[in-house]
Length: 202
Ligand code: GTP
Ligand code: MG
Image (cartoon, rainbow, N blue to C red; front, side, top):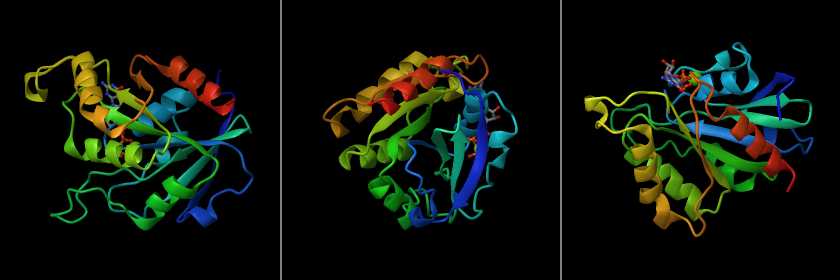
């Protein structure tokens, strides 16, 4: 399940502007700095593709990348950076919500979670919202290569992953599939591509 070709197609500001060719797509979301761009680069083995990453506060867009001319990887705005000082909450801008709830070709949301730090409230809220709205979701834990550090709670990636899965249990009738990845070692890359191939063939 290798990626032979990946091309940026377009940036959309609302669901209506997204490609209408009916090809299946996977959306990548996660907090800023979670390693989204790095994971994209690792998946497609192309450094330039994900360099389209936006700086916090810039116009938020839905970015479509066409893969192997048959499906899309969709880069969604990151969350968690403080736009306003009091805004530690998710930016539930209407278009993001709209996209998740009504984009018919969306096969699964890939929610990226940093496995090198303990669970963040905002990530739990995000997972909870997706779960409650029954949006198909896959959890992708990032930075699994990182060694434990005292300031990060002193836990290994495996422990943070187990904690997170525990904490979100109540939000789901069926626990979401999950993967452990590292863009440094490419851990989980083939598994993730295979998982996406399986989801597309349903
Ligand atoms: P924004 O574009 O700001 O939203 O961030 P992002 O989610 O795209 O994260 P990005 O890929 O830019 O990575 C953020 C930082 O984490 C960078 O310093 C990366 O080098 C580092 N990083 C990303 N993935 C990994 C990983 O798998 N392992 C390690 N050790 N570091 C990583
Ligand atoms: Mg980025």
